Every structure is written in C-alpha cells, then in structure tokens.
Image 1 (cartoon, rainbow, N blue to C red):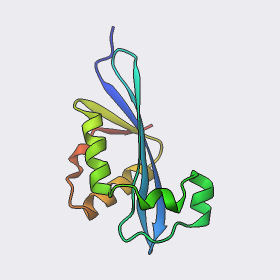
Image 2: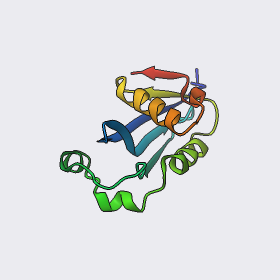
Image 3: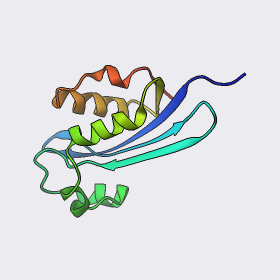
Image 4: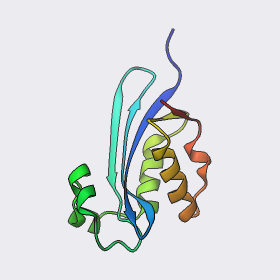
Length: 121
C-alpha cells in the first residue's frame, strides 16, 4: 500500500531579540508519497534586527552578516509556502517550532491555518 500523505519536517532557528523569539531560519525536509525527498532552507532577517547573540551564532552557525541581506519573515514565509504546495502534514520535534511559527505569523498578520495539520513527532 502506498502512502498518500506528504510529510514536511520543519526545523526553526530563532533568536531572542528584545525579549521575544524571532525566526532567523526556516529549514524543512519534504518526504513525498513516492519516497523522494526535497529540502528547503531560508535565512530570515528579524524585524528591527541589529545584533545576533554570540551563543546563537555558535549554536546555529548563522552570522549577523548573513541575516542583514536575508528577506523579511513575510517574504521567506511566502517562499516556504510555495515550496510546501498542497496536501501535507507538518512534523515537528517538540513544541518550540510550532509556538515560534504561530507567534511570528500572528506578528505578521498571517493566517495560522497553513500550519495544520501538524504532528509533534
């Protein structure tokens, strides 16, 4: 029996800026029903971004300079949404990715329905 669902495993990198978590990278791997995979990665420049914590730079390998030329969350999100296409189920590892995505989408006045269905793997 062949699987019908496309699963997209999402990994979010975020930085604490002015007391809030802001997404600095969207990463994902898509497992298609035919068994093939695709990957997506996009750096994101946080709103009013000036400095990236040294610990986050060490943890993620992302440098401040990389984020200065990255698109805004909205631009990155629309690129990600186009890549996802239709008929998928998101997979996350823990609550962090879902919560940060929901917060960022609310902050940018984007509908959160796109994130569901989502399974905490």
